[in-house]
Length: 407
Image (tube, rainbow, N blue to C red; front, side):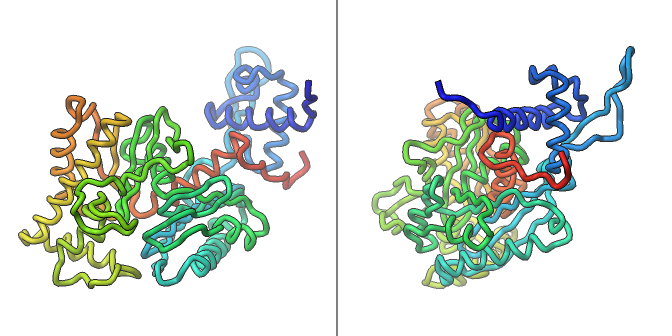
């Protein structure tokens, strides 16, 4: 039998105590001992260690006991640690930093023509945005435990390689290495934007706590982050959720993937804008700040009752509903959340989406699936990625920060 080192056991116990404090705070050392099964002396030693690492603090409050001295209560230390999430998309970088309690410290939105910049320049811009964020007053005195990068495409998560991101024009880009080598070896996670957006919705969004949930990115492309039982559905190769490349109309418009009639080519934001604003959208692919400005124009015209714009939005909503019906039939989610640029368009998209999903789902009432717009804006994937890094401290997926004071 392989021997387990003292250090391995201690690391396991440190994480167990950290998880317990997260779940029970404010709580006493005695409560932590009871919940973990560790003896009180061991718990006291582990708490001192975690305090030295900036992960746990004493609240200054005490528990009321009938016998003996009152126990000093513990909570997570929200002053010492941060994690940062970045999303790169066709026309922007979004950056979010959170503390140990998942509370937002910083949110930034940086315009970027990612298609024109190319992969290596995007990596440089990601690093620059991270370095600028780490210098901000809200973050600079904290230990940044890890960074996540969300990308719209197929990601080999263990290696951090972007296998294919057609809307960015990327193939086999070692993004994790490109970012990590500029950050002195700081832990870096690269994942699909829809996956991290789904994690954000599960933790913070209007359907938070729904363990079977789908998040649809509302960008130039369409991806689905799928949660089942509170866990991401990744599939055998880690590439599940590419609902945007479900073929719905064999003779439909050409998609960025090279096929025709994909959901993305029918109801992606770029496709919507071409139909809704035929006089405003150029023939070349949209980039830079084009998308946000054009979405704003589409909203204005739809609010004014422009028939071309309204008809285009309603038609796209119907296509979205057909894609949603396929998801309902396969994974039966309890909630589906429309994100990104879909959100300002939901007054016209969502009624038709619900109608088509109800009509085409095999289960009655679309299997009970609730369909809602996100309230996390364009920062959902960045927010979800930052939270994933924080919770990786609990699970062991990230190393615990080193002690900054004697333990």
